[in-house]
Amino acid sequence: MLWYQIFSDGVEYEARVGKPFVPPDLTIKQVWEAVPKHLFKKSTTKSLLYLARHLLITYLFYVFAQNIDLIVSSLGGTPLARQVLKAVCWMGYWSFQGFAFAGLWCIGHDAGHGALSDYGIVNDVLGLVLHASVLTPYHAWRFTHRAHHKATQSLERDETFMPFTRRDFKLPDGKVAVRMDYTEILEETPAFTLFKLFVRQFFGFQLYLLHNRKGNRRYPAYTSHYRPSSQLFKPSERSAIILSNISLLVMYTLLSMYIKSHGWNSAMKYYFMPWFFQHNWMVMFTYLQHSDPTIPYYRKSEWTFVRGALATVDRPVFGWLGRVLLYNIASDHLAHHFFSTIPFYNLPEVTKAIKPVLGEYYNYDSTGVLAALWRSFTQCVFIEDEGEILFYKNRAGEAIVDVDEKLKANRNGKPVDGTGQEEMIID
Image (tube, rainbow, N blue to C red; front, side, top):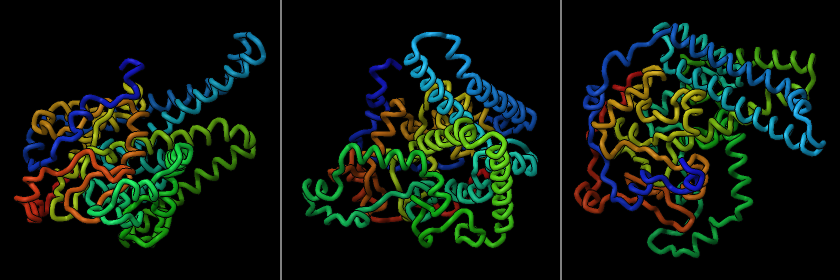
């Protein structure tokens, strides 16, 4: 991608803009039959080799950071030039080590789906350790994430990135509202938008875990992933939540020991700053997977498992770097939603196999990731309180995609037959 294309919309995105939307009526069986059976096989050895490679990369980033002063001083130059180069090196370390931390989280994510090994104990031990290493409660996240997979883009049952509605913003009825009405309520300065984006990117995931920020609003306010009695979990899952919390306490203890022996400055430079950047990358790719002006949400009468799985977007997040360090989590996310237990190293082949079946319903977007993030954050503002298939509207109350008018007339609110499809998820 040439530099001047980075902040322009991808051609795939432009093809969806303004096109009347007809929801897919594909079946799971059609998609299932397109995938060669050998792609479902898991290899514990292969997964462990990928993990070992990733741990080595993470360690090498750490070694680089330890030698930044030596590297910069060896290059000479003026004191100002050395200070600038040192700042660039530290920013580079935090960014790339943040990628590495996000990769650890991604491998733990696959463990949560049982996709690393045929042995459940191997998946859970790896997931527990890897997620604790980046301060994520493994089992608590695993339970709600699987619920997300079973109800993706369902306005009643999905667990994450739930959109605001017209009522939430106290906007006037769409039939009488004019542009000025939206401007008065929704308009904000670019600086404030950037501030909100910063908070969401660097703190949003922890706020979601802490009090269900942007989670499903059917739960009481301040519902937490850390509380075993939370309504997020079944009573039978409470012991696993306690185990997750214990794993975090162990990690906090290890960090405290490191701080005691090396000081806060070292802990901040080598761990906490990359950890903050990890959250930025994680929130970026998870948000963009499901929040896009051209991707629908469904209410109960129109939702099916297949439609939910297709309401996600594959993106080449930072190209080869995203594939190597994030394990195809962004580039093959749609395939992952259909087959969540297929190992990450087989997902590119799965995508290739199902694309002919999905046809126009395969959503891909080559828009540069920073441009896509800004576009979604500024244009995915709210949805309507009524309607069964809904697209985001912007701050002018406009949607760039809408449901085909003929379909609206023909359906007339009749439900589709999606009963039981969520139980067919391979999980």
